[in-house]
Amino acid sequence: MLKKVAAALLLATAVPALAQAPSPAPASASPTTPPKLIVAISVDQFSADLFSEYRQYYTGGLKRLTQGAVFPRGYQSHAATETCPGHSTILTGSRPSRTGIIANTWFDLSTARDDKAVYCAENESQPGSSSGNYVVSPMHLKVPTLGGRMKAANPATRVVSVAGKDRAAVMMGGPVTDQIWWLAGPEGYVSYKGIATPPLVAKVNAALAAQLAKPNAGYELPAQCVAKDFPVAIGAGKTVGAGRFAREAGDYKAFRASPEQDAYTLVLAAGAIESMDLGKQAQTDIISIGLSATDYVGHTYGTEGTESCIQIDRLDQELGAFFDRLDKDGIDYMVVLTADHGGHDLPERHRENAMPMEARVDPALSPKALSAAIGAKTGLAGRKLIWGDGPAGDLYFDKGLTPAQRARVETETLKLLRAHPQVQTVFTKADIAATPTPTGAPESWSLIQEARASFDAQRSGDLLLMLKPRITPIPDPTKGYVATHGSPWDYDRRVPILFWRKGMQHFEQPLGVETVDIMPSLAALIGLPVPRDEIDGRCLDLIAGESDSCAGR
Image (cartoon, rainbow, N blue to C red; front, top):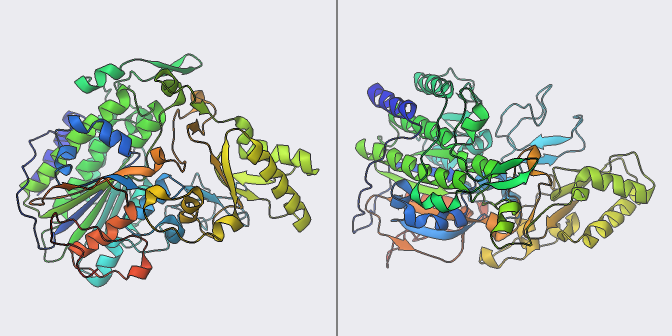
């Protein structure tokens, strides 16, 4: 067993990617017994657009997954298309309105913290902590994950979560995990469990440190990426779009936003499966894997340059090698792969590629600027009237306002925002609370229905600001990220949902489904009852033809 783990580490340190082997051909009959291991993978910012754009080029793990049950039009159906809310839906069967994870960061104006911000995966009661320097905790997740339900039904079940981001690991694993690990920085993978670092994690961290200490000359450009090989100016003499992920020794930021990061997360996941003998006992075990590099690449370089193209190619190869390792171990496993949200390319490249209407957000829509403008209009200048995490999303009014002052602030804020040419709409808290929980096809929901799916009465803001489509909520790309997500529009909501198991018959369903449908679909496969009134999702029949994997659900 240790030899297998060592082999995985050697592959990861010799080259930034695991070796690739041919994917097995699917058998003709679907299996009828429960799988021994569920492998739930989230590829951060892997939009349905990215999936379809490169689908014809897949030869590795992504190719294998397209031979199973394919739902190319999956939806993170809520409006708050961010990492934490999206991950909270995948293995809970519930939308953010039920999970309580309405954003990566929300605001609690009653706290003593100066910034009033609460990070989705922290315990803010810890002394001296802040939303940027926090103690990781799953305490804000209000519902159980699939792993938690499995363990409640059978305590012998092993639940493991591994990810590039703490919030991905926490929201997919939940509070009831045997092992949970995420990449915390150059020092490697850490856990909030307070357990001694096992030999496997120590080996992976040492290998990662050795890899990081060496420069990376970059990757060769795959043939499908050649047409994308041109720089795009973003200002201040900076360009993106023609990179190969070359980095200097010790550059962790560049390492994180590259295929190298996902390679190590998959090495750790493969090692955990082997060292814990997951999938080799009587019960079904589960491991969730959060692959974060695609998101960092999309934010740093955009989604349509050589960087993103190389990343998807390497992801395909890494996944292929990972699945081949599980095959060699003889594990009967079921894979589901999806994403926490989609993404949108930088407007500068969109404008060069036939989309002249693309724009960056007006800085006047930032919470700070709004607060100043409303202060001037209401005679309350000098006070921080409006809190928020950026020029879109939830906005919170100062709780120290009198009822009359608050009414004036809300009236003036609504008037200003609704007159702004980049604003699509603004909903009040009362508007959203009065909206029934949405049902039906997610592609047909209205904006206020999407907002309702993200709404929590205790955590959501007083107003919800939605920008018009094709407005990027980053005013200046030279000071950080160049592109992002978080909008209610389909380019941020649509994600692939792919199920694969050896022997599974292939079918494709192009109509819309939701990520909240994943958990009840997997639960049905292992005979785990889930009360329908406790979740938002529905069971998807994963058997092609007349048989029904959801029978009786």
